Length: 472
Image (cartoon, rainbow, N blue to C red):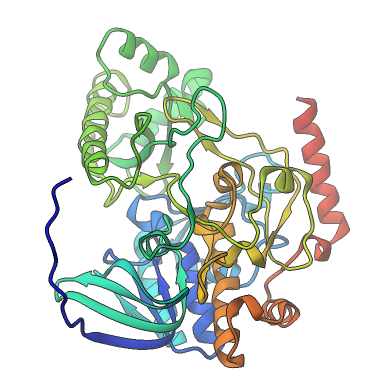
């Protein structure tokens, strides 16, 4: 590859903080609020124009499988605040979570969520920088002491005593030379391939009564979230639908003549990677093409879509597997499936692996018990002062398919932010933090830190549901 030499420059330091949180998605939200509330001077760096990550930028405005007996603390505070504003929560199906009748999701208004997060950060004293792209770490030996950002002002530096990488793809970690996973599928014919890019969008001006009538008349084809299988398969066979998926999820957005679509996917070829600029660019163009192909198919063939239009496409693609830190401990699939309890656990997840294959595969079976997430999985193995949470923490591919979701991400983010603040307060490296102090601090703030603290009757409900799933 041809190269040029970038001459050394003096980079202005625009901010110094105790804790620097890089990434404004669910894990970053939990981390920044927790760090600031525990007394740390905190700055949150976000490359787009709002907080929320996939929940606001890709219209995935849900908390899936959320259960107050599993995920508590900041996440339940956020849900409670959303419910205070009339119309902000569109549907609350969380009562279904333990019985596993559905996803147990809370669906909410993404635009109000953006505003709510702004207010929460302001109240907590978090400094937020939008339109700032974290491009690397600033290191002295094996310790990270800040990050470089690029913005409209050019290259700048932000210094911090603890850095929390919650970029979703470990951008800061791998660009600063910390050890990371970049594995893809672990085995089988897809080994080494990445899951591909996902896509969501909105149809506007849909005749919802017509669609509801269609669901009633043809329940097998249109009565569930996975809709139009026969129509889609026929259209693909006849060359009338462009794309690699054979099913889509659609959901009415209540109070609007709108339909939310999740389904188009761009497969990343073997040897290619989701963080490569050319692949990202091709994926963006291809997925827009898929969305318009689907629009043409639905408008011409599905009652209720005759006068519809594509209202919105996402600000960014659904970037699935990418880099993750290599931590002091890597949580593996066996730990998850056995519901292993850890002495240094700082959060719980009840999310099973939701596996999107690199082509058209999708597999998700809710047959797991809640499981612990250890603090050591948040700690970089080789870089002092570096923490991670959410989809950036140290887990294997199958566990990542579960813990990447919003609910566990906010909880592990809260743990990382609390740990960072305590490390600064006690003047210790995060890896030398007293784990019992961290756990007690989280518990005092309403967070549940281990399965061993869950009520027996709640665990019994999960076990009953798990056995039903296993038996078929």
